[in-house]
Amino acid sequence: MTRAESAFHIHYICNRFESSKSWMDHTGTRHRAGEAANMGKIIFYEDNNFSGHHFECCNDCEDLLSRLSRCNSIKVESGCFMIYEKPNYSGNQYYLKRGEYPDFHHWMGVNESVSSCRYIPTEPGTFNMRLYERIEFGGQVMDLVDDCPSVMDRFHVNDIFSCNVKNGNWLFYEHPNYRGRMYLIRPGEYKRFSEWGGRNARVGSIKRIMDY
Image 1 (spheres, rainbow, N blue to C red):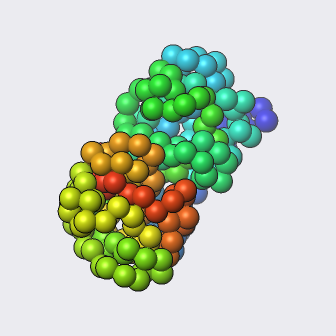
Image 2: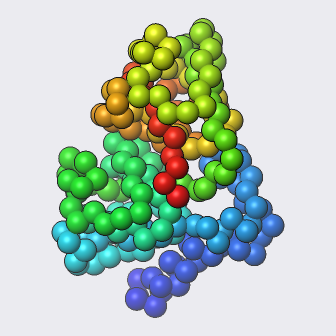
């Protein structure tokens, strides 16, 4: 792909929703076209300290490896994103807000493997989610509207097997106090932990995404 073709592709990613009245995200939630103006911008660089070949993205990208051979540094110029270790939004997940990440240690990565990313759209208003101790919304029901540094202390359970997010974007953390593996939870229904990318049902803490 030539530089001109690449620039056109980036422009297309950033503006493809502007002419439609509404658009639908991966959870089936419909958004107004005006929200496209609030989309973010992230730049991936092959080498440390923002050098080497780079790729700009303003929306979801399921396969960054088609653009870059590796990723060793990242700039988030606006908005916030979830980056994924593997293509198609799989593998380890890392939350990035606006800022500069000169090497993979700055986003707590274990290596330079970044293969896909999701833009996290602004969700105005209140936060509201319902947690369940069994798959398919069974067992104890737990409502949450704020940050939870310890699921065990708040609800007396170690595992969350399913959830229903009514409002807001959230992060699940494997351990208390927002540590360990993290998972992006957007509005919608999750019938089992595998649907948010979890390797098991362990959720130690939960945090609202408010860094827009």
